Image (cartoon, rainbow, N blue to C red; front, side, top):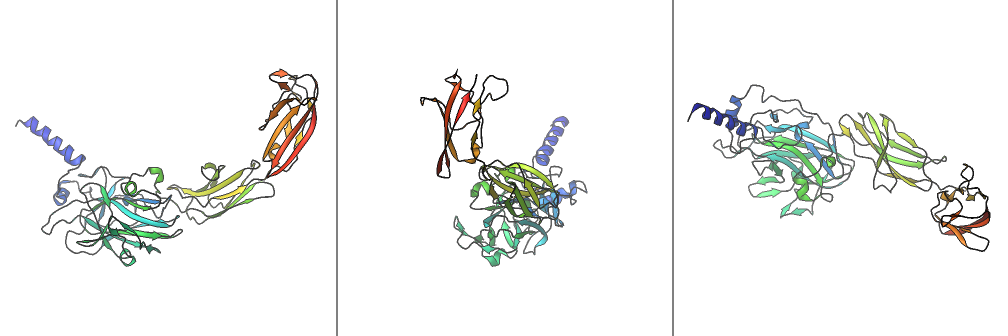
Length: 435
């Protein structure tokens, strides 16, 4: 083999195994000697003190823990032999224990708050890096433990696997990895033939702490997902097919107990509790379709606990929700609070003069306060009873024509038949057209 071809093959090998990741077993002990001294230093990551559940899911990047990493080490595309395809800014690899029965090492805490209670399943995106040190594989699991006020899912069963009982969920237990590439870890292993599902009945308004500790060297964790079973198809959630907009992210806690009140002046008064310590502001959203879709109404400064929405449309329902935000993101919203704007209480009044000569004065027939009733029909008659104009959605735009022909000057009569909450009435009068 000539020297040029040899060098080219060596470069290709480095690119394949170093950048695109070796699909075979890698001896990381030997690898550590080959890389620079700082390649395995603990790197700075985004600290997240509290995640927030949104729409039935909590998604937490492993590297964003607020805990000291200890024997966990941050890895990303700048690390030699990194595993591509990770989510977020990187992932964590445990570099502690090697084999045998070992105690939990270097615990990582992930705190989160549940806004919508229910049955949640835990899945961790991980991959195992199998090695043989004479005792068998040593990189296929980590420890997990959930802290907080929750219950076991006694009736849960999937594919023959039952939910772990409360006493096990509250202890450090092995969560078993299944693949040498990024995949889901779904089951607690109690012994060789006993597997259980990490399923929890979590309560609305409660904060929880998931503790992940090192067990096997070279076990890698990327993303942690807790999803409510009633909201997500199992396969989509555990395979991380959720769009970014569904991810809860590293957010502040939401405001508390939104109340909407209709004032005497016809405005919406909003009040909420500020239970957030580090928000930089609050976002108020409004819906005019019963809470199906929301648009941003305004952003307010921090420590604000009230807002008044003026200029409401009559006979319109308004629904509101409020979120807190800071540099980390935006919280889940509060409860939805709605008010019904009052109807116009003034009586219907029709102007009785129409002079359609386009001088800007009385060129269109004007009727006021039609919004004070649920429904109406307008009809205009000649003296002989012929209908020359009618409308059920009038916009003050009739110019005294019939079939696009100007009506002659004279007196015409109108009937406005109204229906207001089942009560029917007729408003009658006359209109004079002068040309």
